[in-house]
Amino acid sequence: MNINLRQGLIIPRSGNEYLRRVGTGVELIVDISFLRVVLAHGPANYLIDETSTMAAAWGGPFTASGSYWLYWDIDTLTALPSYGVTQVEPEFGPTLPLTPNVDQHFFDTTDNYMKVWDGYNWIQRIRVFAGSIIEGILRQFGNGSQVDIYGDFVAGPIRFTPVEAPVIVELDDRNFFFVTERGDPSQDVGGLDNFRMGRLDISVVAAVDIGKNIAVVYNDDGKVIPASYTFIDREIVGITEDVMLAGERKNIVTKGFIEDKLNFSFTSPQITKLYIDGEGRLTIDVPQTSSIQAVGHIAGVHTVYIHIQTQILLLGATPTPTTSIAMSMSPTPTPTPI
Image (cartoon, rainbow, N blue to C red; front, side, top):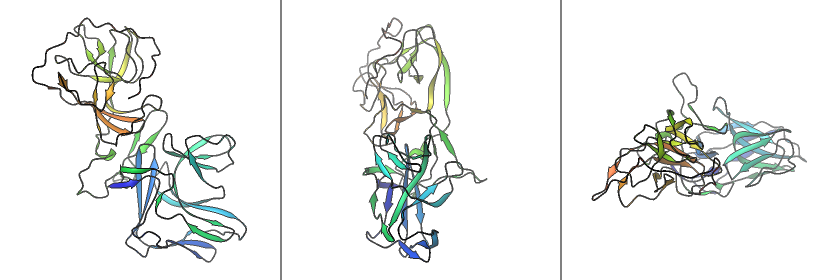
């Protein structure tokens, strides 16, 4: 489903009441068609559509002098939704607080994960806030993003298998996301859920030093070298996930996700196709000469999904030799922004 924000609420009639104090708790009121909750989690956006009133969703009790912030939560193990409360005001931004209080919620806009301080570490959580109770006064957070992120995004409810276990895609850096289903199947706009999720790596030997996140092709000796859109006699076989030194054997990614917070910082929307430049680097620019070979899609600000397509030769293309390339590079090359 197409949405126009991340980490917030979508209410059909802005200003409509959806929270009410009842006894010692707070009731979730749905007297319109639905209330849509959008929870961002790294490269993914999850939806919770509230379609009926929930008595005492937040049970309390809430004291007249206390401060409380009410949230929706998706369990990071089971993917099941629930309601929760914190007494520490949530924050967001690009820099984590240096001296956080225990149970401090902070939405990190550098990687789009909600994090909670447990006294020792920042723990990832999937949460978005409904409102607050400050000194007995109930306040709704209302329609919009709670972290000022607007644009064109894709979101859906979390997909479960027949045995009711969520489908999980593992990313590097110990991150993951749940696979989602599109909320509106009539809109074939794609999304993270449309990708084929299997990860496929192959083991190769480098003929020369090769940088990180570089597309490679085989040379005549059966070793890999950096690819180029000017090569019309060699198709791309994969993308390096680490620096490779000449003669070194490592796995490369031929299909699956690569996350790189240091070198990837995409501003184009998810599902934007990726190609390569003359040195094998990933780019959204379509080659205008020689060959076109799509290698994948943007899956998030710091994440790509590799799915290499068949090479398409452009008219008048002239082969470029691929057997004598030498590439001078230090073992830890300077990252090249895309």
